[in-house]
Image 1 (cartoon, rainbow, N blue to C red):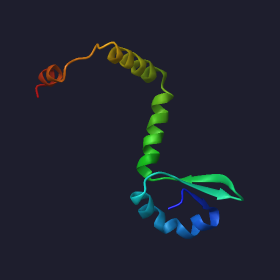
Image 2 (image 1 turned 135 degrees about the vertical axis):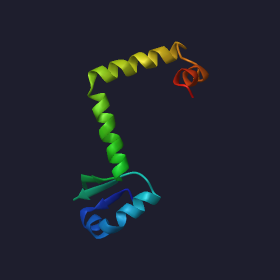
Image 3 (image 1 turned 30 degrees about the horizontal axis):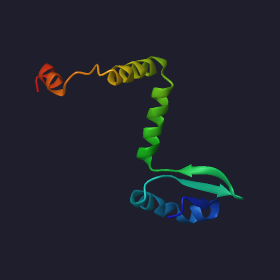
Length: 89
């Protein structure tokens, strides 16, 4: 499936796009007069992007993420066996 569709072709293909995107994951760019005007993407991808934007917009979460990445890079991690034992698994 092409990743770019004119608005007319997108309208004609709208009912088949969910199945097509399930087979070929990603997004479809819808164009009008050669310019992108819409993006059509699977709902799961939309939710993933929305959640990512929420995290990126949360200063506290980003601070914790950066701290965690620094700790991991410095080798300051907890062995999986220790975590499992602490959780009683």
